[in-house]
Amino acid sequence: MGTLYIVSTPIGNLSDISIRALETLFSVDIIACEDTRRAGMLMSELNKRYGSSPEFVARLQQGNTSPRLLRYDDRTEQTVTPQLLDALNEGKSVALISDAGTPLISDPGYILIREARKHAAAVVSIPGASAVLTALTGSGLPANTFFYLGYPPEKQSRRIKLFRSLHDVHALIDTTYVLYCAPHKLASTLGDLELALGNAQIAIARELTKLHEEYWTGSISDALTYFQNPKGEFVLLFHLPDTVTNG
Image (cartoon, rainbow, N blue to C red; front, top):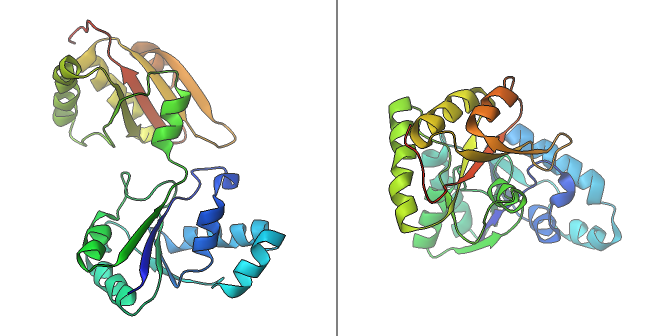
């Protein structure tokens, strides 16, 4: 039985790739990825940067510098998972990556990991970059406990219901909330947060580890004014005060 590796890749800055991730990606038989084109570009760039480094030359020569790239995303995971299980059963090694960051965190992969464990395949998680943790630790908000909300619901009524329910969560645990947001959804998400939580203080991380990385803090209303033309990927973080005002 082969081994399934869950490999974290950089969220922007390629220098954040770990040595262990490099060794794994250049030695497996198959890389399951959301986008084969993006994964191919990543592997090409990593090979250019690190393929000639003395500490990797021997490893890369022994490994597989051209692993098979197999699309694995929300649309294909049901059909591709059996193929990957067959490969593992044949003794092949498989690496699962997402477009950026840590797989399974608001990305596909859960079904594959669950089934691999059911089939007694070895599963090894290789830690690395994560937008959630990068934003949290750099936000200035308490990080001893946090509640990751992922991407909020598409439907506005469900978003507002979720955000209002955080009042009840806050009564049970004092925590920092973290959620992802696409740029075209930022204004509506901030507006719904203000409806549910009032004009609370919020931290916003944008384009993490990239050239235009930005941390911003202020009230929700100020955020709506500041980010009138949002670009890049956003992480929203907030920590409810002891007394909150319903919108």
